[in-house]
Length: 485
Ligand code: BGP
Image 1 (cartoon, helix red, strand yellow):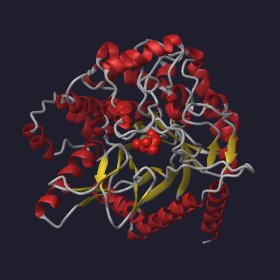
Image 2 (cartoon, helix red, strand yellow):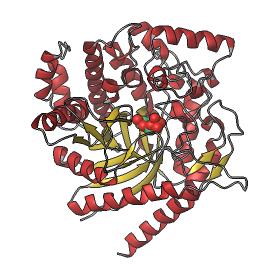
Image 3 (tube, rainbow, N blue to C red):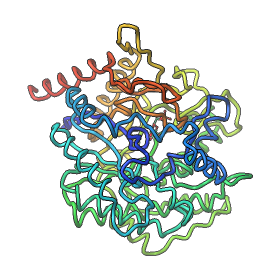
Image 4 (spheres, rainbow, N blue to C red):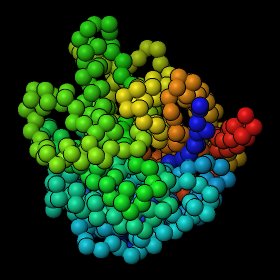
């Protein structure tokens, strides 16, 4: 029996809220990422911060200078009621948003939360419930209080597990009865390929990341996830817990056995490792050899393994934007992807940012996740990043976005027919946001346009794009037809 899907939209606190020092909010790891005009390595520089770039950002903040887009997001903090009204009009069933850890605990290690932060999220939860939408909460979406990086070394330190649990306790005690689905972490595999975003780890001033620190941090986040699930089951039992990774749908570059093996190994480390721990409750066998061969040392305690086995999540979820190609010999033309690079796939078209559009890959991923875990699967992020134009007459025509969505929705239906238990689809950046990868404003995903540019110049007025009407009508007729069947 096919499940009636939930259709949703998503934002994340750092990309959306702005108001970075409003109500006593502390600085976090996203507030200090500068906008850098697009050049070959601008994205890397703004994504992988070093301690000296953080120090520079703090000086800029003191002086009130510099361009730090996450400090303004798309001003959601100031447009809350209007935005929720727009989402209500859109008719989505479920809204995914995240809580800014530094709004509740400005330094991250206080004993008690910040009242003004609590009051802000009271309003958010209330507005979402009154609009009749379900809540899909991401406890943290990349943003970590900066003090926790400077004082404890970010997620390398197990102390963060306790502090994170303290933060989660406040969330569940206060809003637990309103949370339908939640994720302890956004794209938990980001720690591996984008350590500043994923695990709040600064890049060394010279040379590469120490991989032992990267994987220790990831392991600590796995432990934190399991502890949060334990806590939620005690105090907020009606919520459903998930785990989430960025899914890449890898293809081997050639038919060579080496390329095929590389695909398997990369998929294991990049994508399945967190899923096997958090959904299947096991520390997977393949990581031992990977650690050994790369000289990686991770402290894994026996209690951790027991936690994984006892507190695995209820559903699995992933973000999916494009697919990737892997080659053992490193040849082939490169293109970009979600926080990673790939080889160009001649069978696919790519977005202006080089992300290869592959709807069939979504069906493949849905099958792969279900096959591996036998748990219901939520597509909790997907969408098209494009340079939309606000026309003179005040309209935004985005037929390319409608086409992207239609093609992906078709593949979700196919996956359901394959027998995959799909829970729903959540469109990324339903209201335009600052890009997480490149800090640009002009890479837009929304069905609601926000009038602002890369420099933060603009009215921040909200304008419905053509795709708004299409998505609204799609959701409405989907449910009407479903009820009639
Ligand atoms: C995911 C993140 C989102 C997001 C999206 C699109 O990795 O979870 O926060 O923004 O990708 O990426 P970008 O904003 O770089 O286009």
